[in-house]
Amino acid sequence: MAEEKSFNFKYVIFGADVSAGYAAREFARQGLKHGELAIISNEPASNKIFGLGDTDLECIELILSTEIIKADLSTKSLFSTDGTIFKYQTMIVATGSTCVRLSECGFQDTNAKNVFYLRDIKDVDQLTLTMETKKKRKVVVIGGGYRGFEVSASLTVNNYEVTMVFPEPWIMHWLFSAEIASFYEGYYANKGIKIIKSTKATGFITNSNGEVTEVKLDDSRTIEADMVIVDIGGRPMISLFKGQVEEEKGGIKTDGFFKTSVTSVYAIGDVATFPMKLYGDMRRVEHVNHAFKSAEQAVMAIKAAEEGRSIQEYDYLPFFNSRAFDLSWQFYGDNVGQSVIFGDNDPNSPKAKFGTYWVKDGKVVGAFLEGGVVEENKAIARVARTQPSVGSLEVLSSVGELLIGSRFATTAADNDGDVIHVAGKVMCQDCTLNYDKWINGSEPIKGAVVSITCMDERERVRYYGSDKTDERGQFDLIVDKVLYGGKNLKPKLCTVRLVSSPDKSCDIPTDFGNGQSGVKLVQPFMVFKDLVKFVVGPFYYTTPMCETPKYENNY
Image (tube, rainbow, N blue to C red; front, side):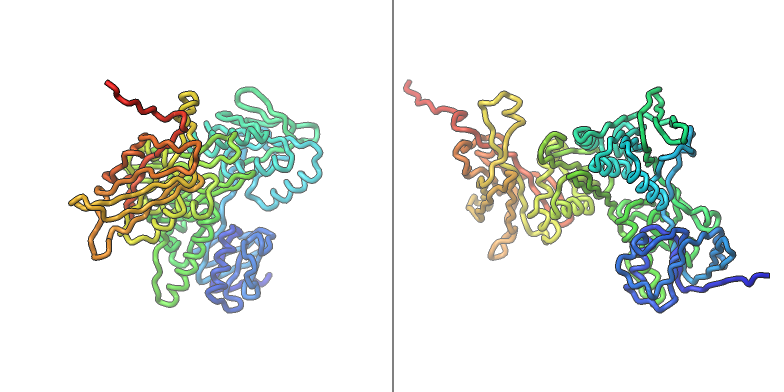
């Protein structure tokens, strides 16, 4: 009778998800003794696959190419196909997700060759080999989700002819609004990607070698294909733990420290359904940002419990991002409620830059930005985290970019509530153009001066200040409420107005938006926890040809 093999570890990270590597890195950072930690996975992976980076592996046992067929959480044991038993004191489940297969969706001819999924290391390796040897270059991407969105761009950059097919009415339907999607669909079309929406792929046509040659659609059309890449969703790999831990929303239910209903077992990354503190509900998130942060939280919680310490519960702000072609977008928060788009979302613009806010119950709960710089992306994260109250959605659409200006991004985070903050834009309006261009085609003026004058109740000037607009025509007036001597300025007694334009071809002030007569700060546009923000304008200058002539009354 063969001798039973058994190994004992203080900690076991089970799985090959990127969160496994992040957890191992955090264990190493906290301090490990040799032989305390093992990573067990059926993947023949390297430290790069696990996301271990430059982590010192001397103290970590990598038990790879090992398939676990049974988990007994009551005895803290994992059983492999060769009969080896791995025992642990604490286990972190980091198995990640597996892809949904076409065969699960009633698809025909699922055994066709040159059909690839994107969640399996072996499949990715085979795809790479096929791309290197295949002479024809027509690719059909089934699915309009995250991976389909990014891989289509990557293939196009590498001179593949790409067609995307998905049943949803627009791309990235789970996250994007229709207006956001319209930009990316137009941009992708300009790059040569064909997009077929609201259409299901139903089967394949193959040649005598079993290789796919065409993709069948549910409207009876077919699309020529040399390769097919499938991205129709994922599913957490938790079958080994069925009936042993509590589950919720397709994942393993955890607390704010990623501890499961079994006290010696934690779950992180894709497989964890955890309390979303910001929204007061339970959610499961698939993103590398959450993989990293949940791994860090779980390991810190484990170590803290061992040392009799406590740590804060997980307080995650949902985050998604992507880079495709020369585009780059970030999203923070929740995409619920009414969406309000702002900026230039014309896919034909040479430097398109736009964003979207989601407003629910009068508060901004989500924010999206395409083409933002670092400070602007930080600003939309702050907006989503603080959930400011907003005024008119129509005004929000026209001045949305003012809420993410770099100076506002700083003051929103750091101010102590003792400032008056006013933002706005100054534009040039040319009356010689047709009506549509006159109203909607105004251009920003850089270097225009805007002033703020604050009075007291006796109509004496207590403060005067000014700011110059930037290249986007935007200004930010930041005034301390508390004056020398301890007296406070009252916003309702402050007036903002145009002063001058440096552009001699557009320096005639108009009273559109009350820029010439002045705007009183009566109603704040946005209220943060420690910041009240006013948005005024836009203000407009016009060309000398448009100046209203002054007539003398000789009668």
